[in-house]
Image 1 (cartoon, one colour):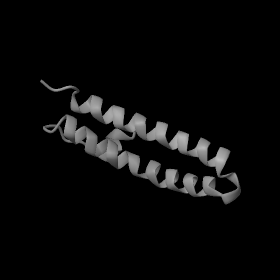
Image 2 (tube, one colour; image 1 turned 90 degrees about the vertical axis):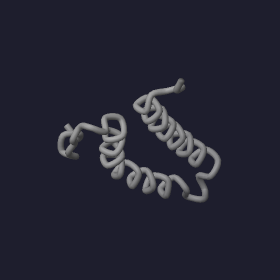
Image 3 (cartoon, rainbow, N blue to C red; image 1 turned 30 degrees about the horizontal axis):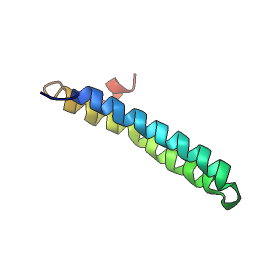
Image 4 (cartoon, rainbow, N blue to C red; image 1 turned 90 degrees about the horizontal axis):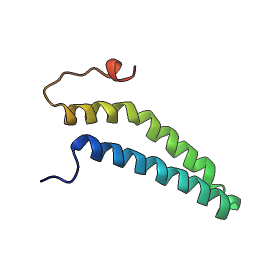
Length: 76
């Protein structure tokens, strides 16, 4: 018996990604503000968020392997 379905595991991992990034921004600003780490973290988040539509497409193909998906369909 599986603990979670593939869709639930993907959802949990994306939520943990956002939670971790939010925590990193808070800690970076609070404790390392003088080092200027927050702008670097923001640039990293921009890249990660640019990749998310492709991750969504891959996740849809994993959850529903027999269906055909186009990236345009998933962005709406």
